[in-house]
Length: 213
Ligand SMILES: [Zn+2]
Image 1 (cartoon, helix red, strand yellow):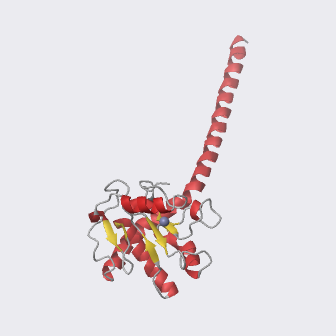
Image 2: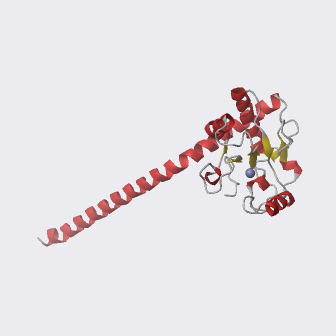
């Protein structure tokens, strides 16, 4: 009897432990599923972009789009607004500059855009030096980020023309909204129509983990 009396609580204790472990495992699975759900979009963008970056370079090389691009850099090579010109690539037909990986992705994006709409997107702004950002911020502090804090200073943001393709409701904007993320580009929530600071022309190379938010 003594053996049973001692064994019963021990069995209960083991069962309690198992139940607690099972419950904790279930909670962990729920949390993991939620995290997965939230990151799936971003992971898809990153995966797609890695593939597209190589394809983008191939397309760009074939069409001599990035003929001036000697850099293959996908890392920050200087502080915000102070990137060396060797880290930047011009993406014709516009004269804006972007960091090499963003430039390759943009080059392939704009080829797809052209295939769909018959022309390249109208582009207004890409990389901005610290001094350029400071000047723009001084002129419009409510709308333009302070120098040192913008993704333009990292070569990872690009503005479409504010009065044409950068306007929500145009066919160009609708195409961007539907397809840009296939090329690693997207518009941040705050910049979307209805966002906290709508700038529908402002797109960022989200596939890079180096963005400032
Ligand atoms: Zn912008």
